[in-house]
Image 1 (spheres, one colour):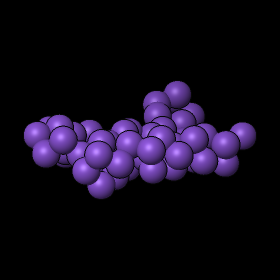
Image 2 (tube, rainbow, N blue to C red):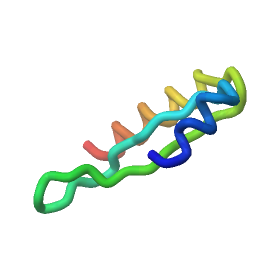
Image 3 (tube, rainbow, N blue to C red):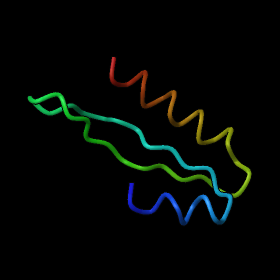
Image 4 (cartoon, helix red, strand yellow):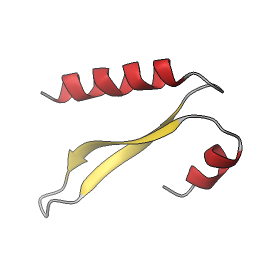
Length: 54
């Protein structure tokens, strides 16, 4: 993800979430970013996205 270094430098939790796979098997995703020191919200969001894909 192109903006990952920015979030790393500011210590904001971020995660790349694959939301779709192309016919060739390549992941297509989004980057989710949470507030400073708010990993709980980020993990909860990622879990909800994973459940929605099932």
